[in-house]
Image 1 (tube, rainbow, N blue to C red):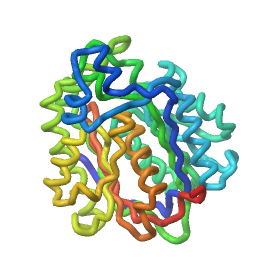
Image 2: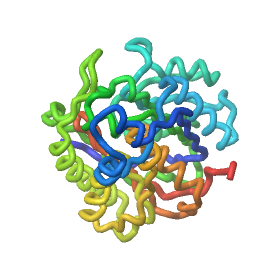
Image 3: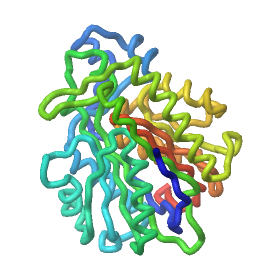
Length: 321
């Protein structure tokens, strides 16, 4: 049974940052590699291009540095680094240790692998560290998924890509932005989406689609219930950018207009644990979130994991404009 408990921390997001590699792979380029087309990919997934290149640590550090700058915080002010990733640069040590060194942090550091749910898992974890006494936690989602892609499998190579997104959360005397949260996992479903060591991603697409829609709806409802909100109270949905059809179907089941979602999948592809912070940062930069808005983060991933969080937006990030 999954347990959700009322948040105890008074903490808010005070800075955000992202990183995408320079190399862009378009659908037309992919069509020269496998039997597919731009029209086929776009219609089924919503993806038109994706970014390749870089390392997990390098992208994480770039996004983390941008978040620190956005928050106006020196690296010495961070008490904990939590890195969500399914593609660590090494088996040992944790990639977070590499990122810690690259950013010049003097704090604890750990990796979290909850697949595409990883950023929300890490965000909740960061609030927990603050509830236990830390002042600031840097949370990052970063992936180099091209490392585990079979470029001859058109069912998966069209989806996955590289990127990173980060957020600084800080103790606040004004209350908390985390109104409700929910995390879960169903290990009985793990055979639908997995990657063995040294191999490439396997995905049973239709089974993942059906399950994803259900777990996103269930997790979102749990978080909204804990936050004492209904679907009508949600101002923005930031979903995991897996497939536009999954998001559309989930929103319909929740009774939230698709127009309320922040979507970047068309240009980023599925970046797993990086996708939610990439979409959240995009919404902030484009003025789609204002102070006091209720923001629902929701995703699912291999495991199969699911996670969601309802934030009452404080209006603090985005000082770079």
